[in-house]
Image (cartoon, rainbow, N blue to C red; front, side, top):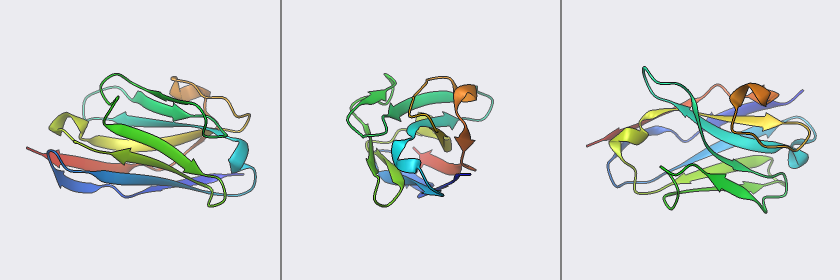
Length: 124
């Protein structure tokens, strides 16, 4: 069983940066595919990016492309979401999710494990 814990959220001014971490406990995380999702109040959860188990392949949703970067350190069992040039519309609870077979999806229900989420608030 793998547990995911997100951290690094907080309050930041527009134009600022935050780095979120998704730390995994348990064995096998280094071969898991990971997705980052966010859910703003009153909106559906959306996938903003994914990273393959090796870290070689990433995907970004158009609204964050060029501003957000996903990376991972499989020795530390951690995946990161670097967020730059933040905008008020990035305000949401951010979640990481993992697939134990190494696949990545844009659909949240296909993932095996989820973190509890971390709040990101961007003020204008």
